[in-house]
Amino acid sequence: MELFGNYVMAIVQTGGLFAPLLFITVHLLRPLFFLPVVFLCVSGGILFGVFYGTIYSLIGITLSSIIFYIVIQWMPKTSSRLIRMKKKLIGKHTELTTTQITLLRLIPFIHFHLLSLCLIEITSGFKDYTKSSLVTNIPLALLYTSVGGWLSSLSPMHILLSLTALLLLIYALRKKEIIIKWEDFFQTSTQQ
Image (cartoon, rainbow, N blue to C red; front, side):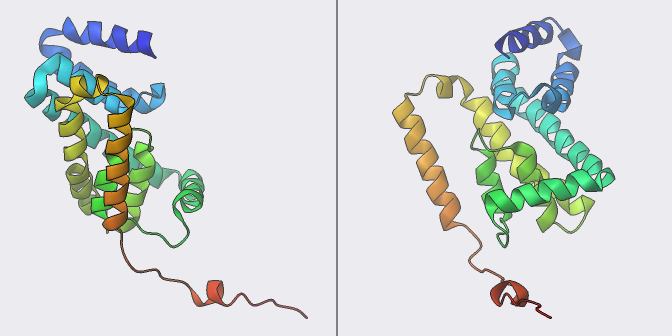
């Protein structure tokens, strides 16, 4: 992965005017190469600076989210499989809020498109999803583009403290109601 990252950065640096388009295209191809979003945002900050790197990363991440939305609508079996996986990981009756998704996107090891699936479940349609996706992607692009160089020099203790603070914040901002269906609460057996 490091070799691929160095190769992409060399191409982008020599790309001239096409470098931003190439960088956004790499964002779109990121899931195929299993590249983390954080890696590309940090690379954008290194290559283009904080302002342009944030804009290009935000465009790339949002377009990637939109493509995920379109693809998941075309593949109902994959969608149901991902929903089952989400229920196992997050919980059967847990519904994340937009604020929680925004904060969870800041944690590098949480799958980006799993959070996009959570966003699909709480939005009412494509337009609402696109707007919510853009809003939840802004802090991710801004933070990792501007603090990318600083993050690489942090000690493990500071990283652990930052992640602990983020997890506590996510817990504090959770949706505070649980809906349990009648059938789940009273598990009846049908004996004949």
